Figure 1 (cartoon, helix red, strand yellow):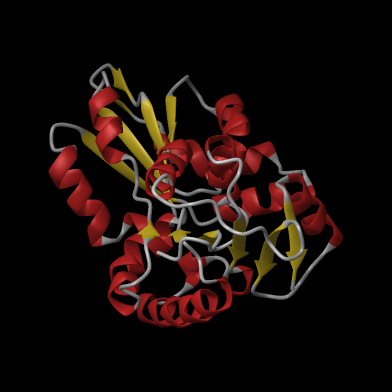
Figure 2: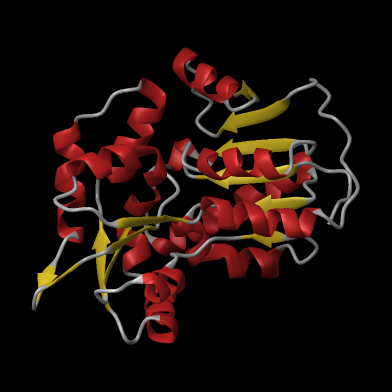
Length: 265
């Protein structure tokens, strides 16, 4: 780990800001860089081999540019697909990934009916099946791969508006009834989704526990960062966010400013 480098957060879009929000509470004196790979958003549309190659190359550029002390990948799709490859390609770096919160869901459920709301890539990945096998074999886990929810969350974060009926349509498959039991937990297995959770609660047919891993990811980063000295301040005097598309719009700049970042192309 580079003891003076910033903590780098990486996501396919602005969803990882849900983890940054928690990290700033736990580590207010750290320097941060946020990278939104919006040029490739959404990752669910990519073939796995092509996305893997893109991310390995892109992280090489980011490591050379920012020399981060820790790299946090809140994105479930990227983490479950490529984090082992990244660790092999860049063994000197420390990566913090995220996986669907299937274990805590299995521990908390009373009905035994758990839904995992994720991107299509995450629900079809072997990593997810292995988590179910290892931690939730006594539950009925319903994998729901939403085609559009990440786009809706991205729209909501950038524009401040989303049609609630669209959200309701995407979450409807999460709610199951069997033998007098109902789904009682929905795992939010995409960092974009917590930004829509209030809309989800409103449109849900009955109350459930929505599990968000943002705080857990931030606490893991805190554990690793606690062994490091504080980094040098960013040259600009502010933390930096970049978007890989280079499309720096005013609404996006305002959003990033609200999270403490100066947006760059």
